Length: 214
Ligand code: GAR
Image 1 (cartoon, rainbow, N blue to C red):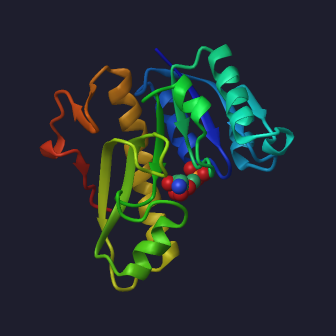
Image 2: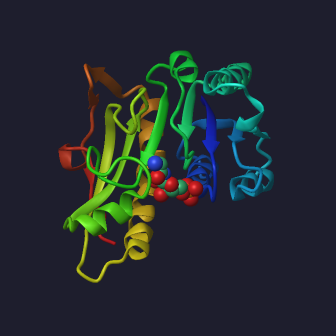
């Protein structure tokens, strides 16, 4: 059983997909705490509905970025969290948390990294005119969306797609691959070689791309 700590700023649909996988018995994990930087995050309602311990931590109450992330690290360590899950947490993670959880923080990003890092990955993909986009689960390092890639899922972009329609399609993929990445981690099947993630005994497509027919 893997102890998870989830950080979310908003809607929390990825948080929900992880809850669902755990409740369905497909992910051997326990969410020990949800931490949010937004008192109005819908993720809080999801935590309440599922009896998950949650906490709002106001970044403005801290004198520096580092002290905010020291607090988060303290809270997660106190809950014996083993893997930190960023689920729509709209901040760049500070060094104290990365040092406390080296290669033990995962993030999901709504584009095929290293393309379109940062905010609005789907909008950037539409504006650039790419024909394929998707999402990426990666470990978090000190850069913005630069850490080792764990799995990606791809989807074609049609000429009719808008930022909204592409976001909706990508979100469906996010809900599949984020729990999958956590499962691989829980099963001890993720190995890091430099910045390259190797997944042991991975059979699907043999290339870590899941391409469901939507
Ligand atoms: C998701 O699309 C996630 O990939 C994105 O925010 C959304 C959160 O949705 N994250 C980023 O853009 C991080 N740079 P959710 O709150 O419903 O999980």
